[in-house]
Amino acid sequence: MTYHQQMQEIFKRYQAEVAAEPADLREVAAWAISEKLWHPRPADIHARFAEDMATALREEYRTDKTGRRYRAKHAVRGERDGRQYSLWDDIDTAPRSHMEKAFAQRRRQIVNDGHQLRLDVDHFNSVHPDEKQIQLILDLTDDVAEMLVAEGIDAA
Image 1: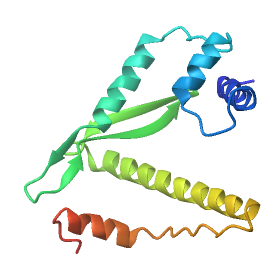
Image 2 (image 1 turned 135 degrees about the vertical axis):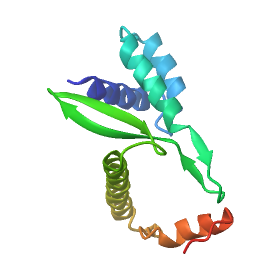
Image 3 (image 1 turned 90 degrees about the vertical axis):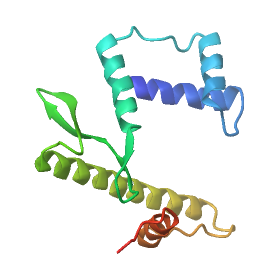
Image 4 (image 1 turned 120 degrees about the vertical axis):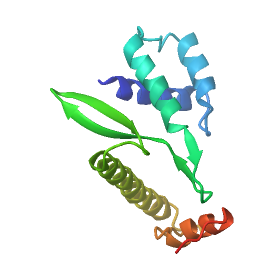
């Protein structure tokens, strides 16, 4: 069983033994530790640094002269010798090839999220046929345009 599968089993057990309602994961953690179902794994300091750095870089924004707030650092994910990696660069100095890959990967994430959300909503609706069906609109064009207008940016 993989580590993630073990974590999923802990959550199932928590819901079965403690509470079958929406759960705060900090409470699940306290319970799992007290039940000796989980303990911290030895830390890989390089992996921890990379995670912390990635979080920090994702949070770095700038505002350009037109008032657009944009994310400064972008990653391109890849795999080499069976190991995943991310290469980070600054949007203002990165080569076009890096930014094209980064944008394409982020767009793919949005598509994947939309696909999974569609499946999840459809499933929920199918197992709750007597309730008002949840509607899902995946065309985000108007939503993005409204946000641009709210920020005072011309959407054209």
